[in-house]
Length: 401
Ligand SMILES: Cc1cc2nc3c(=O)[nH]c(=O)nc-3n(C[C@H](O)[C@H](O)[C@H](O)COP(=O)(O)O)c2cc1C
Image (cartoon, rainbow, N blue to C red; front, side, top):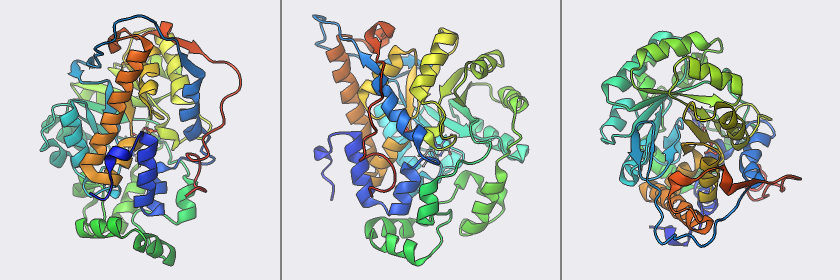
């Protein structure tokens, strides 16, 4: 293997390796946020507002990360978030993500817009497979996707609700990135200067949203028509009635992803959600929205344990996971980190990311003097006031490529 994974110390280190391996347009599509990327940056920097208060002289000779959320046990309270077209990072990345999640005993969420379909991922035979949908303009397609997920044995359904329209990702505009890729001199040069990625992608075929092909009524090669179909498919008129319909269709756990306000959290509770994913879509949608950790603090205080909360967006360190649990989350989700891992070394890279996180959570628990992850609470946190630290220039924006 060209990459020596042992020398990658952190998820940020994996990100830098992914940046070197992927064409710029692909890396920026994965890594970028909307508009000025304020929310993308605050998803990271706001974790620094919460500092850990360690307990001393506790026996931390063995720390347990084993946790129980939404009715099942997991080896750690971490879930892989849904990411559309993950195959851009590595061919058939969803199969590798599901397989790594199975090996690590954590849930994996397949996106309806994923590059592998519902049945392909089900064949990986991971009990904790989750499926994510949007409300599509054609409600019949939404219903069919839900039926297929039910048939294929998915454990949990996530309805994502923060995409009334698609956020403007300015890095994509700068790079001329479109789905499917347009062959301009710029994109040709970008691909040609990243031959490993380009050859692997050409061999496997440019990824498309495979679960949707039965409804787009075109063969898998018609990527242009496929993309147009997708763009028109989102329904900006989606509302709580759609949530109710989906609640009636799905007999298992149903989560709603993209809530940042207490009144929406109240409504989700009243309408039968089994949990809330507190998320701003990784800073890819409403720029200027509050960070997910800040929203978690507010919603968790408000709901006071009435509904399981999952924090999504910005998790890069074990200490982030610990802080989220101290604030009342049952678990966290993360999207980009395992895509960076996939981009660098396929399934081994994904496993490396999850192992790094696991080690960091374990070390943080030991240093915090809390050997059982289930014992974390707000007493372990102090809220930092004052000026936020400046974003790390290595991590912010597209200019540093
Ligand atoms: C490339 C990419 C594609 C995504 N596609 C979807 C999607 O299809 N459905 C969805 O609910 N969220 C999608 N998301 C958002 C993720 O589920 C998740 O909310 C976000 O990545 C969390 O932020 P993080 O990357 O900082 O962990 C996508 C994110 C990325 C980076």
